[in-house]
Image (cartoon, rainbow, N blue to C red; front, top):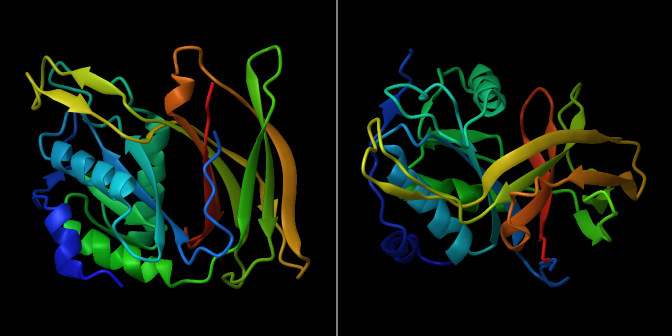
Length: 267
């Protein structure tokens, strides 16, 4: 296992928190020991404490510094910072609601920046030390095998994907495992002119564009608990060279993520 100190040297980041204010396919080798770990950053361009967390997320996703973990990033821009003259162009009430749903499990109010690891731990989003420790912990959990394979796009601009979820390795009694498909884009940026980050050039990675439930996995012990072919309509303004599609398996009540896979899209 890579030494924590060495990882933190790469991922040095501050630990400031801002409370809520009102108002081509990439696949790991078959013998890889890395397990997918989904890390969600709830952030906003209107929050002055968020850029260091955005930077940490980029380093974690690009450097993949945690041994045993395939880090899959989702950057979710909330909308409750859309005041003081700046509207975050990537914000959505959907991502705010997703954070609120996590809060019901974690027993906390939404804040930015917040990192959530595999739906099971949360902390201040620019805390590099906590991020490494929680990612290492999540990488030791049993995960369901998930595959996602791009298929040819149709004439209407929809991209098609074949998704398969293997046998469920673990599940919470009385819960159901939902299959979610997320579309993210790297390389988005803004020149912020107003608000707390006025005058700053902000860059983002894995910015969430869309998230939809595509089914529910069964736990009857069969080799494949879920299989489907699904279509995703891409916005023509999205850069296909920077798009990734991620499928993850998440328990509805516990919010635990128990499997994931991600693929790049090339034009």
